[in-house]
Image (tube, rainbow over all chains, first blue to last red; front, top):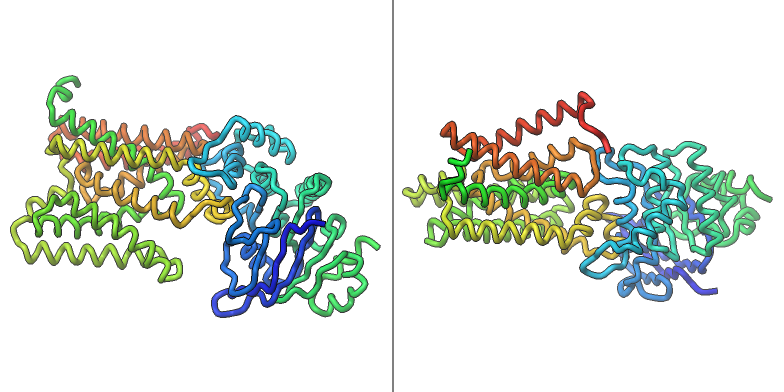
Amino acid sequence: METALDISDLSVKYGNADALLGINLKIEKGDFVGLVGPNGSGKTTLIKAVLGLLPARQGTIKLFGTDLKDFKDWNEIGYVPQKAANIDPNFPASVEEVVQMGCLSGKKFPKKITEQDKKNVENALKLVRMESLSGKMIGELSGGQQQRVLIAKALVSEPKLLFLDEPTTGIDAKSRKEFYGILETLKKQGITIILVSHDTGRIDKHITKIASLNGRLEFYGTHKEFCSNANKHERAGYDHRLCLHRS
Amino acid sequence: MLEILSYTFMQRAFVTGIFVAIACALLGTFLVLRRYALIGDGLAHISFGGVAFGLLVGITPFFGALVFAIFGALGIIKLKEGLTGRGDSAIGIISHASLGLGILIVSAARGFNVEMLSYLFGSILAIKSSEVAISIALAGAVISAIIVFYNDLFHMTFSEESARVSGTDVGKLNSLLMILTAVTVVVSMKVVGLLLASALIILPASSALQFKTSFRKTLLLASAISAGSVIVGLTVAYYYDLAPSGTIVIANALLFTCLLLARRAGILNKG
């Protein structure tokens, strides 16, 4: 299997404190990884470091075999940030304009939106079933609808690796169910997905691997392996529901 | 109405005012949405130091202001990094230092208070043909830069983090935005004066945002509102013998108030 993300001996400081220490993690192409851990365990910090949004104190990060410092193919990466639904309700942008921003990934100066980009925007909106609302203002949508628009924005450049940081926070049950349906479709398309979630009672139905963090990487493996040591993980503060939904 | 356009000084005022107003409105839309609305005020204070320095050493105050504003803008970015992201403090520190320097120069030099007033309050009706050319060229450069970098500026305004992940060099883009703002504040100096320069950045953008429409339409509306306010302001100033800087800004403020009330009353169309 080819490696989508290769992290070696990664340490990241947040202020004066070590947020992450000695992380070693290899994620293969096509994996759907649930990144779990208690609050403050470094899940978001890890994703931000991988995306170059936070500097690493030490260690290396490789995306599709290329060192992060030299990585240029940002169109291969999709990112839906934490609290993505907290969009300024007065921000003057239509759904179409927001998704079009995703087409800029990896483009060189001068960045222009092409006819092909417009078709890709239509397709991405269809995938998240938001095509009928393309002319609506982003601030007028519900939290769940905004989330789907941001997923379309992340998908429009046809990424091979998708990061989702607590994407279901603050959205209702129906939207959440639809959201996981979209992720299933993406999984079938072979997109590598890394999903940070506290929604542990639900993600276990979809993920192929679990990475549990608590400053350090405490576990990385299959769901079955994780659950065979469920008591140990539960003692370490993880949600037992992660092992209830499948045998 | 045609009489007003028969005078060369009014033609210059209209042409310069409209160009500068459009540059301010375009830039202002990005700045207001990024919560940087008061950067215009800060850069105007910095420019005051540059004007005073120019008058003291005998160079054109316009260029003194331009140099001070550009270096001040870059200094604010650097100081903001040193203050771990506290941009408001960085603006306050640099702008007040430059303002203090300007006041020192003015008080020590004694004698150019009258000329200083024209920079503080604007003197669009006394604008020279060379100043018209420079103002139009600079405003045109700002408008062109915004058009060329539109997609990146829009993305950064929506989400700086998301723009970074798409491979955009947000640091360089922020510096560009600050330099464009510095240039715009200085070219606004002749139109409405340093004291009111930031009004042309904040008010048209804030008015356009009341329409709650797409980003492109918001930019076009802000430009139209800004240019319209200059036309109305200059016309009122001409016929009622009032200060054009005041009438331009008041026209903008009244329009903003009307649009705000109209939106709250549900009169403005959404989408």
